[in-house]
Amino acid sequence: MSRAMSEAEFVEFATVQIAVIDRALARHRPAGGHCCSCGQTLPCPPAETLRLRRRHYAGCIETARATAYGARPAENGR
Ligand SMILES: [Zn+2]
Image 1 (spheres, protein in one colour):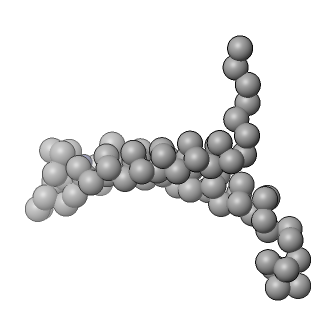
Image 2: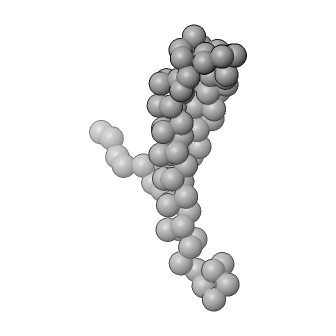
């Protein structure tokens, strides 16, 4: 039986996903002209998809951290 991830587990999962995405993005670099190093024309559709996924996970981490820590007056400087 599965259970929902805790917030800390999700942040860890999202952090790992970002590392995997960063490794995949390393294979997509401008290779001269209008070509990506993977062989696609720029803008490279697979790289754009990876960047969207990276932004998604980064946003989730930011939201989780803001929820966990953002409301504390001492950390907000209030
Ligand atoms: Zn590419």
